[in-house]
Amino acid sequence: MKAIELFGNVDDQRRLQAQVPEGVPAGPVRVVVYVPEEDDAGVSWPRGLAAEWADDLRDPRQDTYTLEDGQPLDAPR
Image (tube, rainbow, N blue to C red):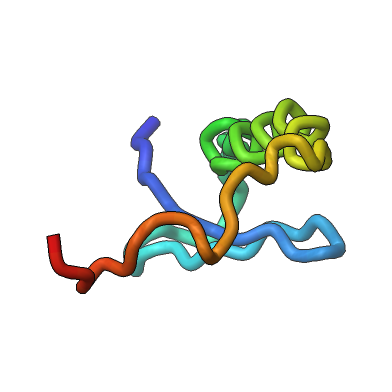
């Protein structure tokens, strides 16, 4: 059996759409679908970070800086 890597798309009705190269004869084929894991999609890390920091970000004691703090970047040194 010969393997050909294809990239496709699954729509909202869970139908797979993929274009096969010319030379692939019509007829039944075997399809293996690799679904990206949550971490591969880059979703897990920001969600976890937001959940972990949520209490700290809501705490008014964490607001230690204001616009009046510090010096402008172009201020003389």
